[in-house]
Length: 113
Image (cartoon, rainbow, N blue to C red; front, side, top):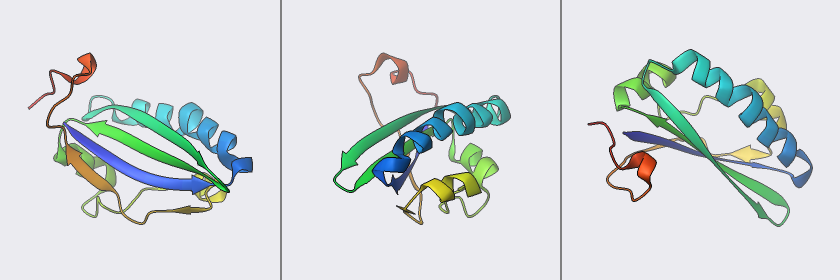
């Protein structure tokens, strides 16, 4: 199981709109388009940090090949929509990928090989 992790920041004024965009538009679209093609779900982390709000998106895939099918051969480059860019004040230009090594969260205890 692979976790695709990316960081983006908004102003406090844009934070709720960005959160809503992710949860009500982007993630449902990804689910519709990628379920059955290795996409397993997401986690979204949010933290207010003074003049910014940081978001960490964690997309779960069954393999790195599934990530590449979604993001292409340059899979470490983020895939960012124009709408997201309009709400973000800055973001990382690289996506990190981690293999799930262990978990005590029941949902992830039996990670596929």
